[in-house]
Image 1 (cartoon, one colour):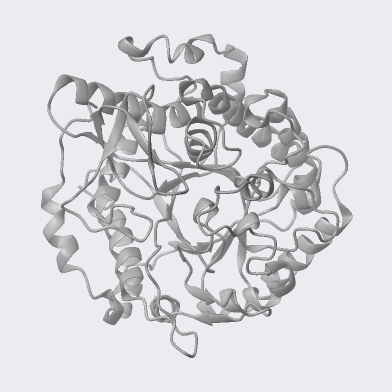
Image 2 (tube, rainbow, N blue to C red):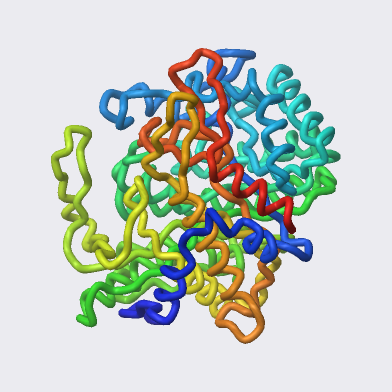
Length: 488
């Protein structure tokens, strides 16, 4: 498919008309019947805290957060929501919410502080307690094995092929430890975000600005995924196995050849280099004008591709927003707010001025989730069951004196995006071939949101970070989803 101008106008009116979901929880619950799995998600680095407890090691995000100007509010995640100390409270929130499953991540540096060697006894004990609490409340578990928190001790990070082997050893050990109690395993979450933001543009950890020279991190993460699948199966885990890739619908800003060419390049870099090897067993052919920049894709060992192309039990699709691409250098924003042109990155993102945005600046256009699913259905006809991850629900929350947050915008965002996905996968619709088996809403708790620090809350539950107890208060979005799930 050529990513040219294609705005899904037929859905725009429906999406606008669908607002005010706050008062339609029962109607929303009706859409979730029939075994459709509803989960909420978190990640270890963002919520756990206890950064110096029990022998936990530093991740690249610990190191990154200590560098002046890296985090918008100058904060870090050393305490965050203090989930390690409050996990029983959080398990109760999950139980009362009524979700089917909880997708969390196992902190690599809590379990293996240096990224190699025996698993840490204290880390094992914490996750034992968490899993037991989930089981006691009848909540299924989906464990992510790598969610951005690469051990800082692994020199070179994902630029180093050896990291894939270290990850495989870690995963095999974790599978043997927890394989009897975890219902589903995500090997790696959002490798495109790690490559683009962490190694190409430097706005995430580890803060490298390698641009096209970041491409080896694509291959090493995907190789780690394939080795992890093999390691989990060798450990005879009982849970299903998959990964979560970000998928971004891409269009060109104009019909000009240069914009169309760069849109196709962005689609390749953000989507296809991560999905094609996993789902088809090969990298996409490099686009002719960019053969030099993409030469890494031509030098792949066929044995590596066979390792990457493992049969999967499910495929996770992380959706945030569409991208509109135009020729011309990318501009980043420095910590002091000054623009920094990236002259050797030959394209940039144009805004979707016709749509509102979230607090993160993400385009709030639910109709594009249908575009993303239709593209997947066309490109990958043999997809396993798909689980949708809905990210981007950051809004300008205002807590009252009782720490309660009324957040109808978040309710509309989550409802409209999921309803668009459900509509797109019904019989006769563009993505009807996709077996949409469930959704994971991001996220359960307000938390440390990577380079935004605590400035962009995404949770269904408000956390008072000024209080040593990190008091939790369910928002109206939590109560709404609770009502919807009770009416399935």
